[in-house]
Length: 180
Ligand code: PRP
Image (cartoon, rainbow, N blue to C red; front, side, top):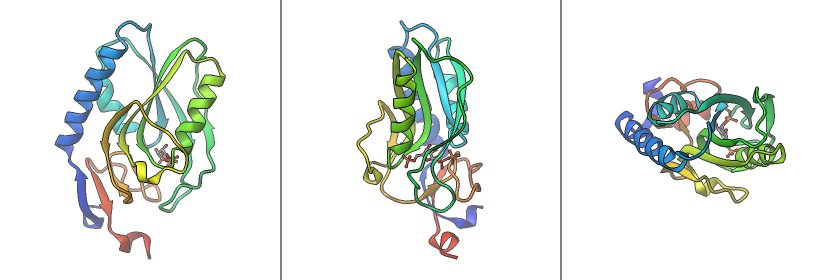
């Protein structure tokens, strides 16, 4: 896998530091809320959510939805499919959606609107990576680990054709991998 990476742009150490920082911020902001739901959007959220949650020093419920927007390849389709819904009611609940990346903004816009429509009291987003130059619709996550340029990245949850998610860092994929 590593031979396919052109450049590491977020190291393991940086990721750890960002998880600590975001976890502390969320702990502070939600200290008076009753059992917020930490909602991971599968599959990209897995490493980030499992690391971040260790630094949220509050009782949180952990839930998942499986939402898909990139149907293979390197660009978002904008066609959002909910493949597995959350397993509990969000009515009157405070939701923190946990994401690996916000790119076009379409996935988060769709999910946030859906949860609000179902009566969530509040819905915020924590994302490890934000790629604002990729936006096709306006969307601003409340908690951002790091802002990245418009490059195709993999690792630490992010895939290319379902591979590379298990790299411990975020890196730019060599073009030869996806131009074949
Ligand atoms: C990725 C990522 C976000 C979404 C962001 O998921 O995890 O959910 O794309 O893109 P957007 O801002 O352009 O909507 P993907 O659909 O690739 O599914 P995955 O998490 O299973 O890899």
